[in-house]
Image 1 (tube, one colour):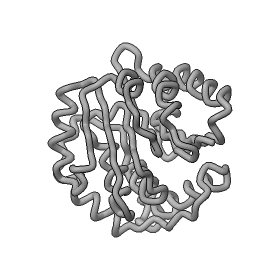
Image 2: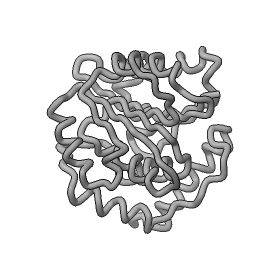
Image 3: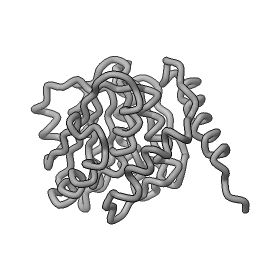
Length: 227
């Protein structure tokens, strides 16, 4: 089997955004994926970040980068940011755009968060970034920030992905109209029950609009828009 070319990969990323637009999730014009912009971010992240393990595939990295670049969120909230690898692609994509933005990543693992803070020093937006050792549920309940992009990737040893629904419920009062929700791992068989609950919650809440699962890799990613 021949390896995908850069053009092939860019076409896949662009096709995924065309799907999100056709589903009514994205409403503003989306620029084409720019390999040179991604490669600049890649040069800051991949050679320098300490990443003990990750399921964020090369294609998913490109998607996350381009998602933040295309949607230009003013406030990004990450629940379960671990060592900051996935979150870094969102931050790097957003910094390509215009204007200031802020981002907060929370994780219960203090050792992982220490690594995340060290990793993020390689990015240029460290002043706009707050990485906390915290339970996302508690942090969201005490927050007064309005969220434009919510990224969920918690994976506790005992509860795995079951907290996705609870996190979304706690985040709901803070989500602006038009906000976007990214949930990682919807295609992993071991998490099927957790995601059934998550999607049932979305379907039963009037504030949430269309949802789409993109099978970019074995893990996949779910995208939902807030009405």
